[in-house]
Length: 255
Ligand code: 1GP
Image (cartoon, rainbow, N blue to C red; front, side):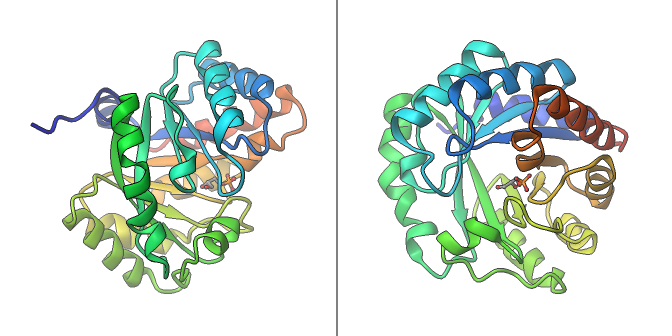
């Protein structure tokens, strides 16, 4: 019998009360030591979970070391955010078992998933099925995964894919503008997608400030993800300051 796992239940319980904020750490950009420090600080300022992954090089020993360091430094759930079947670490609590629905390459829709499925089972990592949609500009994630990025002024296309994902059994939808995107996913698109689906909506890519986070949350995102703004802050102190502001923007909006 299929049961909802611990991390997914944790997400659902929290979502009853508030919007959530996840920090994304890419093992290709942060050392295990820095990842540990960022995770500890994240927990102190009220982040709800840490995602680990990336499109290039977030694999193998370096991925394991980053995940272990985060687990040793904080008690937040660690959720893998893999670029392919290489992005699996046995030390993580859960994995966004994601399908990039608007890729042109079946490898990113079902291929990598098949190659990774038994590793997830063997290690006992909790899989959370998720529809992953790349929105313009898409950045590295869009290029690497051969996506056909959804035009920013076509919210209905995003909503159609999101609803299809839900009807195929995916329990989360993620709208991704791409890490480091100049502009986050348009508010209108978030609104239209949110109105179409019943599963929680995650939005990431290009969210850097209190204003960005609040806008995205007000438009309808349930979970807001930030990576670059924290990873590239330059110091732990600056990362903390940015994160505090972003979380304020997220938590000010009622679920
Ligand atoms: C990328 O959505 C995430 O996969 C986070 O994007 O690095 O721009 O915050 P940023």
